[in-house]
Image (tube, rainbow, N blue to C red):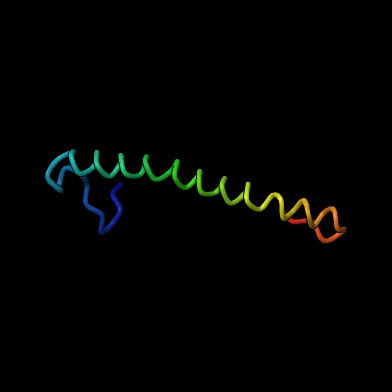
Length: 59
């Protein structure tokens, strides 16, 4: 069943655009994960310092 308002790759002129979109999505996912890890690593010393001072635990 097709979604209303969305065209398929075959209607856009072939599979090149669909392949490019897929490649872009595959490139974005690792970048998002890397950014999230960088934030978690950066937040870790703050959480440890708060824990040692007896402050509230950071999640």
